[in-house]
Length: 520
Image (cartoon, rainbow, N blue to C red; front, side):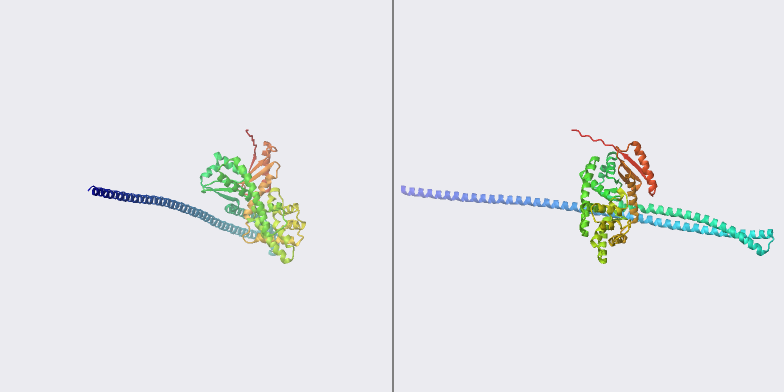
């Protein structure tokens, strides 16, 4: 019995142990499965969170791109609207010029009609005078017949002799007076027509060749350019030698000067000042020196490019620099450097066809206008000055002669000289190459400055306000206050004597002292 109980107890213990083991293993399996499920859920949540972050990032990038696209679209629309507005303003100006020219033509027609009426009146007056003379002659014949008691034939003969002599003298005097009166009237009318034409057309021509526009980021920059009490704009005009025009045109400042090189440097200086943001008299001079050096390098390159383009050899670097300066000179509106290059090609072809020295003709044609870079500074005919420059740098005399003779300042003695003259005329006379009015205007400006700089003690001179005002800067060590006043009067009298110009020219003589010290 005891054994049975023991067996039963052992079996019970085993069953209970097995049940407990099965229970714990089952529980562990469930716990493990729950843990794996939890980890899977956490991993899924992390993946979802990462996906949400990426989606949010993509949405932000999409919003940013959309905003950028909107801003670009707005800028394009604004730029297009500005271009449209500018074109509309230009169209309005052109319409205004056309209306003004139409009025000018109507006025000229009216003037011609008035002149025709005056001529008709003068003809009527002459006819009346002739009729009056005929009546006087008839009365004189009757009186002579009554007094002299001569025969009709004798009286007629004496009367005719007397009347012929007297009438001839009276008629000659009358015709002379009427002719003088008519000439004076016509001359006055011609002057009025010319003056009115110049006043109407001068601005149209000179604006194209004497101004440069500098764009501004916004109109607030105009105040900084002007400066306190106009200090900055006065310094700009005094240092750069150009007129600085600030008007209602949006985001534009206009630089005015007849000298293209001076205007080009001034635009570079003003652009640099606007980028830098510091606009002071000292900064203006500093930038001017920097840009002048840059432009000198550019001029050298322009000359070398012209030499390379034409295939000319044996030109010294100094002459290449002088040649590059022709880019900033015009002759009746034609760019002188392009004109010289054209002449070189034309001269080469002519020389080849007639069997002359094509290389010499081409080189002479390229260099024939070098003197135009100096003629307003030292005076003299530009053809002779061109020859002097070529001679100074060792070019051969045959080449120098072809350069000097192209305007017949000296007799032409070679085929190449005739070729250069012909090439110059061909390039200058092609349709649309030149504008005479603007060249005369520029020539007058150059002559104004040349008169002032010819006096001893004058450092520099700038013709301003389209030639109506001239600023003359003198050396204060050479010119005292008394001499300054006398010099300004001498310059004014010289301008009156040697030049022809509309209106008046105001001469402003500036005697400036500068004192610079350094605190250490």
